[in-house]
Amino acid sequence: MRDSDDSDVGIVDKEAPELLQRVEELWFEDGTLIIEARGTAFRVYAGLLSARSSVFRDMMSIPQPESSASHSCPTVTLHDSPQDLTHFFKAIMDSQYFEPPPYKTNLSIITGVLRLSTKYDVPYLRRRALMHLDCSYPSTSLKAWDARGPVRTIPPIINTPFMLLCLAREVDVPWIMPQLMYCVSGLPMPILEGILWDEIQVKPSEQDQKLLIVGRSELAYLQNRFIFNTLRFKSDDFCADPEEARFQLLGAALSTKEIHALGRFGHEQLKPYKEDMCESCNTEWNSRLDSARREVWNRLPSVFGYSDWEELNKLRTLDLGITD
Image (cartoon, rainbow, N blue to C red; front, side, top):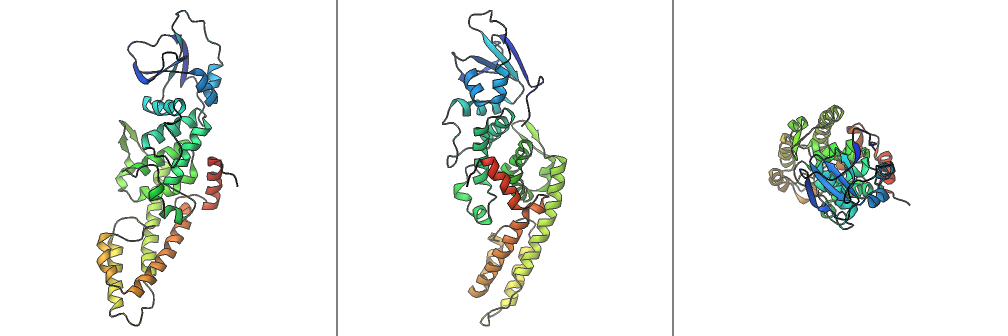
C-alpha cells in the first residue's frame, strides 16, 4: 500500500469553489467532508470514511481550524482520478454498488476500487476486488481455468487482461500475474507500447515488458513442442490413412501465429483436419493434449519469472482471507 503524503493530500477549511464540478450522486448536503480532485468535488461523510479507511482516519485526526462560515466543512484535496474516486466512494457509501462474486462488475469499477482500497487501506474492499479477479482469472488449477467462463464476473472485453496486468503490478498481486501474462501474450506485441484508456496512456513496466517478450517466446516453443509430441502415437490398425490426417493437422497447427498453449485447438481452421482422423485417434490425441496442457499450466509461473503455483496460491490465500 502506498501511504498518502503531503503531495497527495491537503486539508483546508473552505467552501467548495463554484468552479468545481460536483458529483451529484456523491454530494450529500449533510456531508461533513468535501473532497476535491482535479476539478471535481464530492461531499461525503468523514466518519464513515474514517471507519473504513485507516488513512482517512489518520487524516481526520489532524487538528483542523475553526470554521468561519456556518455551512462550510473541511476540504481535502486529493490527486487521484475522479473516476477512480467515484467508484471508490460509491463502494463505501452504497453497500450494493460493489458486491462480491457471483455479482457482476466491470473493469472501471475494479480499477478504481482495487487501486484506492489499496492506497487508502480499506481491506474489505481490496479483498472483494481480488475475489472478482480470482474467479475471472483463477490460479488454483487448470480445471478452474477451463471452467471460468460461466462464473467470471469481469466481462472479457478487449484489452482487459492488459489493463489488469498493469493494475496487479501496481497494487502488488503476484498470484494473478502468470495467468494475466499468458492472456496478454496472445495479443499482438505492439500492445507493449501501451494503450490509451480513459484518456490515460497505460504501459507495462520495463520489467513486465521483458517478462512478456521472453515468456511469449517460451510459450511458442512449448506450444509447438507439445503439438508435435501429442501427434506422435501408434495409430489404430483400422485407420484408413492416419499418418496423412495427422501430418496435415500438424502442419495447420504449427502454421498458426497465435499463442494458445492452454487451448484445445478448437479453431475453425483446424476442424477439417481433426475430422479426418478416426474416432480412436481423435480420442488418443485429445488425451495427450490434456496431458500437455497440464504440463504448460504447471510451468506457467516459471515461464513468466515467478515461483510455482503452490507458493503463489499461498499468497492468494492470504490476500483473500481464506481459512481452512
